[in-house]
Length: 483
Figure (cartoon, rainbow, N blue to C red):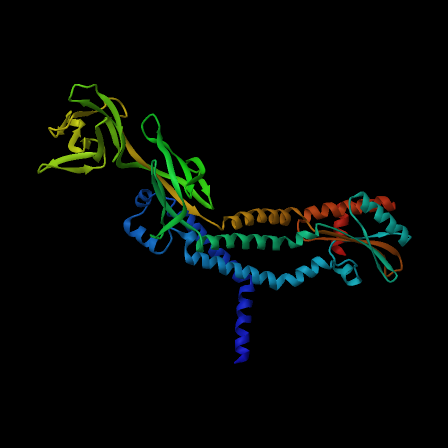
C-alpha cells in the first residue's frame, strides 16, 4: 500500500513532465484561444451585434458553454494551470543536465571526443608550443578568447561564445508561465462589466458580466458627453468627459473616446455607447406676468425652483417627453421627446397652482389662479434632453504578468534564434604514424551555416599563420566527412 501511495505522485509527475503531455496541453490551449478569437466575446461586443451574429438558440448554448467569454471561463483557467504545471515539471526534470552543460562545459577534447566530433581538421606542425602560441594569436585576432587547458603534460585551447543561448529554453518557459499566470489571475480575480452614467451625475455600481453587481470604492462622474456625426447623420464617434471622485474629491479627469480609456486604480473605463435617457436635462421657458409686467426667460431642470418675482417661484415637477391624454389623465407614450409636456408648480405667497405646458399645442392648461402664463422659448436647443454614457469596465490585474511574459518571450526567442553557442578546441596531437598535427575541432548547437562560416574562417587563418597551403573548401569538407 505504501508503495502505491508513493508511486501515484511519481506517476503524475512523470506524466506532466513528459514532453508529449506538454505539447498536447499547449495545443488545447491554442485551440481554446482561437475559439475565443473567432467567437464574439462578451462584454466587449455590443449585445445587438451578438443578436445579429447568432440565432437565439445558438447564442443560448454559446453562453451556457461560456464560449462567449472564453478567457474568463473556469475551464480555460484550469487549462492554463495544467499547462503551467507541465512546463514546471518538464523544466525541473531536464534542469540538472542543462545546468551541468552550462556550468561545466567540456573543455578538454580526449581521444574519444576527437574521434566522433564531425567538424575537425588536422594541420601538420613541427612544434606543439609554437603552434599553440600561433593559434592563440589567430583566435585573438578573430575575436575569440582562448583559454589554455592544462592536463598533466597535455595543453590545449578552448574558446566559446554565447553559452547562455543554451538556457534560452528556460527563458521561454518562464515567459510562458508569466503569461499563463496573468491569464489565471484575470480569470479568477479580474472582472468585466458595464456602467451607464447620466450626464452631470455620478455612478459607482458596475453590472458584471455574470449578472452580479460590484460597488467601486470611488465614483465616476460624467461632466459632459456627446456624439459627433458624419455628414449623412451616421455616428462618427462618442466622447465623454469623466472625473474620478473619491471621498468627495476629484482625483483624476480625462476625456475618453473609443479605445482611449480612463484608467484609475487598475480599472479601465472604455467608451462603449451613448444615448438619451428620456429625461429632461434643462429647458428654457418664457414666463409672462398676467399683471402686465415684463416677460422673462428662466432655465428649469426637474425639481428645480426659480424665482419669478419676490413672492413667486416656479418649479418643474414633472416632464413627459411624449404624452397622450386618456380619461383626462396625461400618460407617457415613449421616451422620445417628440410631444413633450411640462408640469409646473407656481407658488405665490405660499399658495401653489398647477400648470401643464404643452408646446406642441401652442398652449398651456392653466389653473385660473396662476399669476403667469408660460411657453417654451422659440429657439434651437431650448429643450435639452439628458444623455448617458455607456462605459465598459475592465479590471485585469494579471495584465502585468502577460506583458512581462511577452517581453521576456521576445528576449528568449531572440537569444534562441540569433545567438549560436559555438565552441572551438585546438590541441597538438601525435598521430599513429608518429607525426605531429594541430587538431582543430568545432561544434554549435544550431545554425550550421553560421557555425561553418566561423569554423572555416578560423581554419583558413590557422593555415595562413602556420604557413600551410590552402585546401579548397570542397576538399576540406570531403576530408572532414571521411574522417
